[in-house]
Amino acid sequence: MTPSFPLAQVGVDDFFDSTAWFLIRNLGLLFVAVFYVATVWWVFKDARRRIDDPWLVAMAVVLGAVPPFVGPIIYMFFRPPEYLDDVRERELEIKAMEERLARPDLHCPVCRAEVEGSFLVCPVCTTKLKQACANCRAPLEALWQICPYCETPVDTPTVVQHFDPWENEPRRQRQRSE
Ligand SMILES: [Zn+2]
Ligand SMILES: [Zn+2]
Image (cartoon, rainbow, N blue to C red; front, side):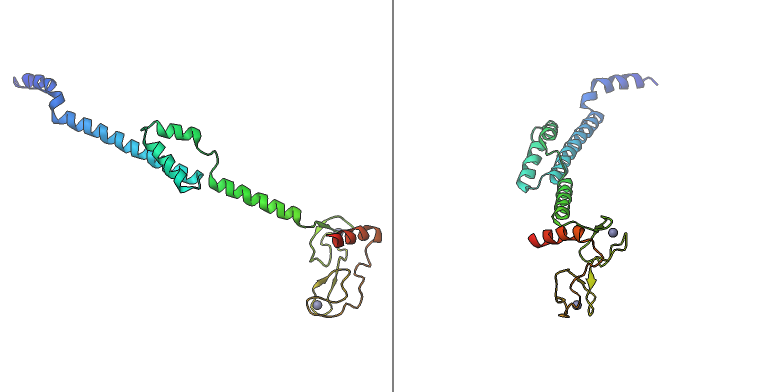
């Protein structure tokens, strides 16, 4: 019973030399070190998603590492705003849009629905758009005298008997001028 008080006194006095203090200090240092490595690792992962050039990624990691804990904050100010995946996705979207615009946009002369060059009939209003080759069933352009796919002569060169000539003529001229 009596030795407990002097022991406690000794414990307080020598606390900073004790094993407990070393343990706490080392745990604290370990925590800081792990946190430091985590911030650098985060900078590396983030930079890799945003920067294409491996040298710039390496520089970002150095910046994230060298002023410890402050570097990642500086990096956050100067990092590219977009992920590379988003940039690529946007470029693909723009490319797809350009392709869509470059394609001559064909419309049904009767109902103005969008049709494709290979359509024989307008799927919306069932207007006949093109004649099919008698032999291979390929869709034939109005001016073709022979099927380019199977060399079968086209017996009725005027495909578009059902077309209003006023509707059809400008379209043909436009196609020829391209
Ligand atoms: Zn139509
Ligand atoms: Zn044919």
